[in-house]
Length: 267
Image 1 (cartoon, rainbow, N blue to C red):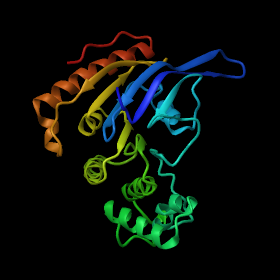
Image 2: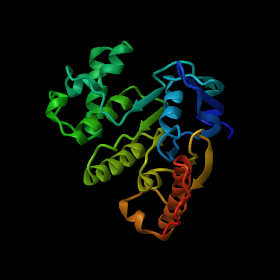
Image 3: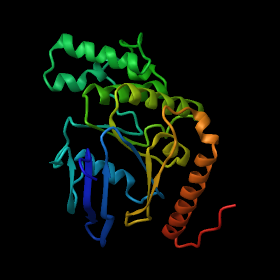
């Protein structure tokens, strides 16, 4: 893709245990993500989805191949990439405000400026009034909103999200999906979003990639002709349901392969 914001080229990741054989987690995987695009990644458990995000984050180095953001090779973690994990990973000794302004503080942003940045992002995620609260005083959904605000406060070029809503109840999860899209409309970012939830992948993404069972490769790309802005009503449309059936069938087949079984046809 010409001018891609994020480019992953022929990446392979192999791990070797102390005694066991080499395990290939990701095998010659390539994909591009355009500026301000949301791309969802789905696949069976253990297929390398989270490893892929950690590669882009610079937390894992590829055995071969390369990753570029804005044409620059990714070798280490950097402020141009923000990551939100399933676990909230907040600093328990810092307040909501302290967590959100942590990145700008590390970058040497003056106090008045970073407080303004924190206030803007706390308001964006609907937590105004909770600036002085500590993580232990917040619900799971509130903590994840803090985590998103903290990632965005660094103004990253690419936002990496690894099952960020997986630990939330269904109602809170739906709210967080809609909140993420509303934030994205206000401050569009390039987002790579990993999830086990097919509905979530389709609802959020411009495109969905389905990964194979390990070693992780890209089995299919599903482009979504769903208008934006989106509301949850889109999940009942024929286009959404047809794409869901297609993606579900592929994941069932890959999961069956991983277990050495034959996939049972979907009803």
